[in-house]
Image (cartoon, rainbow, N blue to C red; front, side, top):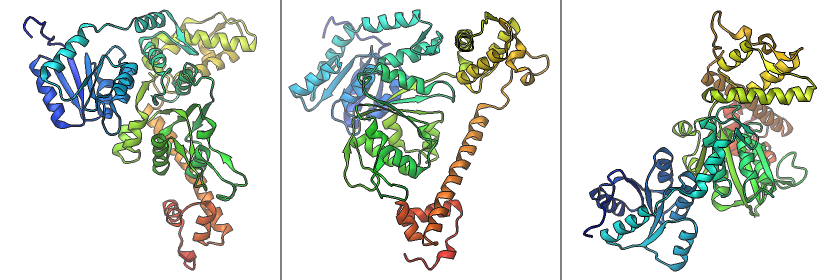
Length: 478
């Protein structure tokens, strides 16, 4: 080892292994060599760290429960494509080595190994670590664009989104899109599908807020004829409809814990079982989910499953709110003016300075969707070639003497209000569903549960949740 160049003190390494002894042993080796070292006990934990920090190199065990080393490798190739990954395994076989290299591993080493062997391997990999020419070319192209697909904007925040779409699209990795209402989550999902190997297959979007639990499960997994009241014919579920394509679950945070468990099972087994059937069906889909809520907070509140979160959050994409991409507002305005003026046969050449100032100072709780609606209204109301401040009809929202437009209700309050309205609607639908079933079955809870395809304890739990008393039905048989 004499004469070899010492490792850089600034280099950082992430060690991923489910065996504590291996993690600690390797940490000691690389700490002594001057590395900044972090360790992860699982693939899921490693991906959380990679999303928050940058590493010069990653060493991961091949055989790990939950997410194995190859899955970690493929995810890193998307999250940080320039970071080399060395696969470590005690199961040294030619096929696994070949698969690791084909998946993008920088190198491969078998246990047991000596400290000199592993440090030499890392030296070799770091010495040839270069930024991918393809990645540099992609970034240069993105910097020259004022948008991507149907997106508009050249802000740094949106450039990150474009880059992530291009990186993740060719893979089959599950994607979780996070962003406020109106930021374009479905547009991102459609763009990923468009640039994927599944582009020739279907793109199926599901709004998880629009259906009560029983109907959502029927929509997702399908049902057989006669499996519950109203099931007059067999229905193919959307998982099956999306076979060989992409399934987009919008507002996935709104599904119940029961449906979450079933969704997790589908993701793990790649199989679905329609309601009322015992025959499982194989499905081949790429899943993209989206939410405007904080799933980690929901996990702490025990309203969202942590294991499902890890399955969904393999590749996260954060969509910035419009208030954080101020430089894109003029581009968006011009695009929307052109669009709606063209549709309406109007000639609109500009916005008056005070109108532009008003729009640039607004906080946009409804994000891009709200801006588009404002411009459509202004084009409709505009009678000349210039959109004036009055055409925006925003004056009543300003404070006297203020150039900035305050948000009439903060975003947390707005989302909470929407949630309450949605929950109230869902509860009303559930109440009608239960009362109707009881009425048809003359108050007999067992028969009502059977007719709706629910277990009696679950049906009773739903009654209790809705405050529907069963005291008048005590003659019902258990």
